[in-house]
Length: 126
Image (cartoon, rainbow, N blue to C red; front, side, top):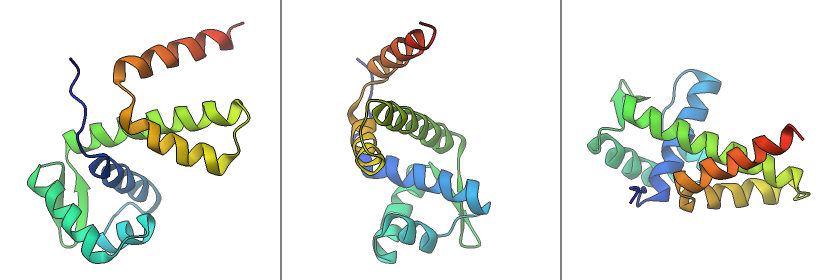
């Protein structure tokens, strides 16, 4: 059976770091707190857990994704983007699609996601 990440919050933080770094080339705890609309203290606790899990590194108050952290962040970002786009194409408004995609991305198995993606891509050719 495929191993799923037990903590969707961890995935959200990793994805957030990925997005912030793409926009600003660096990421700090305060940037995460603002992006996720959480307190700096909450973001600091989450960051410490990610550091302990060796998913991120911290240097001079800047955060960096490790290879494993980046892999997880990219997977969850890709899955969420795909789901959001698909929901919008189905007629769901953008705000609802974004919220629903974020919720679904954490519980959808990789196996199901790959099959959904194959199906959607096969329909593009028709």
